[in-house]
Structures are given as C-alpha cells and as structure tokens.
Length: 237
Image (cartoon, rainbow, N blue to C red):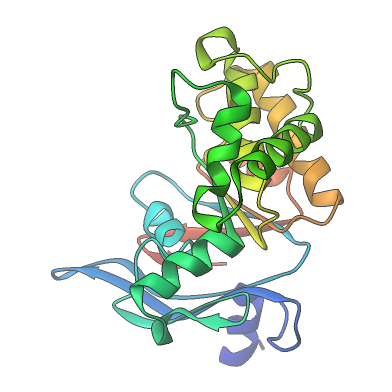
C-alpha cells in the first residue's frame, strides 16, 4: 500500500536535501478571489534535471510557471529558487534573484523587431550590471552555442521561426542561469523547426542546464526524462 508520504515524494521528485535543489515548491497556492489557479503544489527540481510540466489548457500550468519563475508570489505555501526563500525577499531582491538565476523562453519569442540577434541576446544581461562591450561579447558566444553564429547581425524579420526561438533561447542562457523555464517553446513552430529547438534543449541539458518545459503537448512531454502532470491547479503526478 502506498502511504500519503510516499505519494507526496512521488509527485515531488527525490527527497529534499543538499545543494543540488534548484527549485522547490511546498504547498504553493495561487488564488484569484475564490478560484485557486494553483492549489497546494509540491515540486522539487534538482540540478541537471529536464522536466515537463504538462496539462491541458486552463489546468494551471501558466500560473505554476509564474510562481516558479517568481513573476507571481504564491498566496499560500513557499517557493525556493537556488536556495533562496522567495517569501523572505523584497521585491527588489526577487527581481535580482530572477535576473541572476532564471532564464525564460516563451512561445512567441518576444524579440525586439529593430534589433539584431546579437542585440536581442545582449539585452538578456541588461539587469545584471554587465558592461555593454561584455554583453555583446557574451551574446555572440551564446548565439554560437545555439548554432546561430552566422546570424549575429540578422534582425527578426530575416530569421525563420526556429531561428527566432534559438535567439530567444540564447537570450535566456546568456547569463548562465541556474534554471531555464520554457513555456510552450515549440508551440509556434512547424514540426521540423520544433524538433530542432527540442534537440537544442536536450543538448543544453546534456551540458548541465536545468530545464523545466511547460507544455500541453503530450508527445513533447513523453520525450523528456521526467513529467509532472497538472490538472485543475493540482499536481497529480
């Protein structure tokens, strides 16, 4: 018979402890009025993991992303990122934590139309106090890492959808974040470009990047080593 404690550990991943815990949610709840968009979520993500948070539209995935990424504070429960309890931090400290430890990749890229690929990636370091020359140099390295070394001076309208997403991924990793959060990273791409972006994420993970992908795509989720299912704001497995 499975005990309550065993079931909790199964949904949360390995037992908590040690310096390798990158992200921890404990009883994380986010309410909007009487609606609990996220309801008592428990989750532990360790350094080097590649995790899919999967569920249908309206399941609470986006709310969970916002809470994991410190974009929203939970109404109840706790969130720890890179060992820091978000509930103990001021708004300025949370912004600093986010800038130093979390990279975001979104479905629709969010690139500045008039800026080159290099400039878009360099913008990922704007809030990290990095001098402009160093931002540009690190942006070029990040673009080389995602296979866009020949597109440094191209603007978004000169890039394919897959290339735009690779620029967005380079922007997310240019600061060497502790955690990469990817929200439907292949959702706006055709199947070939989507497969290339997913392979890039696998390559980054193989290189040590900790990644959490939020998706409704069961096929994408099935390709990842670990899956966390969300429905009606509840982490079910």
